[in-house]
Image (cartoon, rainbow, N blue to C red; front, side, top):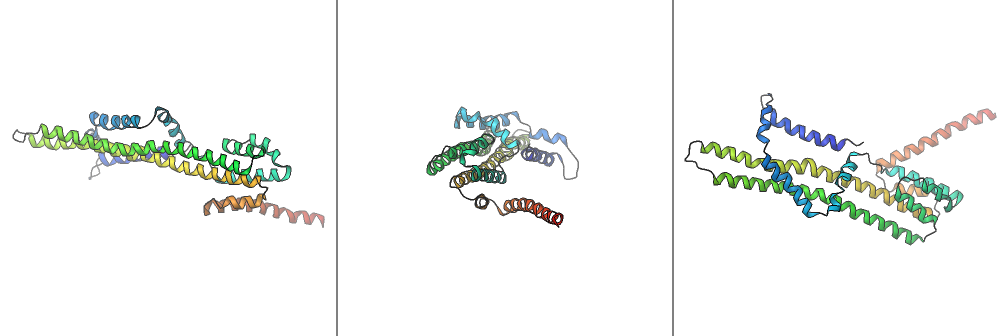
Length: 287
């Protein structure tokens, strides 16, 4: 599980609530929360935002929302280092036993994209056609993910807009019923202004605590998945052309950041170091 999104959203809410109930003197006034509770404002902002989203996107796209929430709460399975190791392992098998030997190995892969990519080169399809097919799949995935992210980006734009609509409605009603000649007219002005501004508060909270973080998290996951798929495409074509596994590893590492390169290099150096430590022991036995 990836709890960063949940922790972040809950922390935002708690910090805002703390700012409302904690006074300058340090005392806690729970009753202050009542000033921010207004069912009509919530109906305008929350109801209006989701109604506008319903009008903006197809039902098929909106049905994917639970899937999106599951994605941001689960651990990201797309680790570029793991993909590089898997491709290099496939390259070593192909170098020793030929491309046909990869068919059984392909069926063991959990990633459908990697599995289908391996099967394409096992079937001896032309390299240009393999690249075109894989890049086509990548393009379709980009389109799907862009639509998913756009739902939450649109929501982050609509929520403050409906907050402003609610504020305007409140101000119009307040000014229409305002009569300063009557006793207590000034008090009704200040209380009406406070109620009118609550909708802006609701809209800002909905946009910045819910929609924007989800959109950003989905975008980060998308970029990570695209990187892994680009690594797969380049690695598969390199295997098909019969390149050396060590050269393939070096080529694919160019996709990584310097930090990821160091971690991958350190793991490889550790294995070599173990082998080097074992050699002197064998030499002593021979003597």
